[in-house]
Image: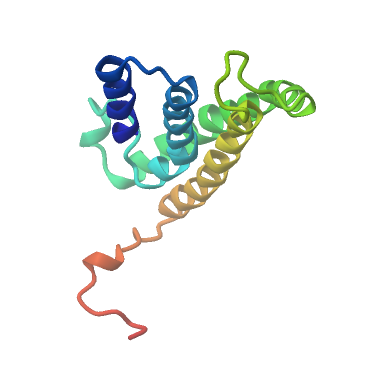
Length: 154
């Protein structure tokens, strides 16, 4: 994306050449990165969180807050995004929507990410629900492979 942005700027201001498709490709890539990586970001626990109280709580209290937040906030939002986007995406596919101003002809594919993102995020949310439920049930936290000195399967 950075390379493409530099290329657009150099072409436009250095040579007076504009390319709408190239400019739109940056938007497509940015949207794809955001939409496809939301579930991964949640899995890595790198999402935005206000840790004023959370940082001082123990694992069980954190698990309870995460379980309730996932159950009553995240999963309903995923369902809502999917449901509210479905007709919008179907109409885009029905007309094989493309850019009106000479840009990329694949707008319908970009809009499809509005359905992919809540599905991926929802799958991760279910995995997190299970993990938090296990923590509340007394299971120990899993150890990262990188933290283990020896691998039991090698």
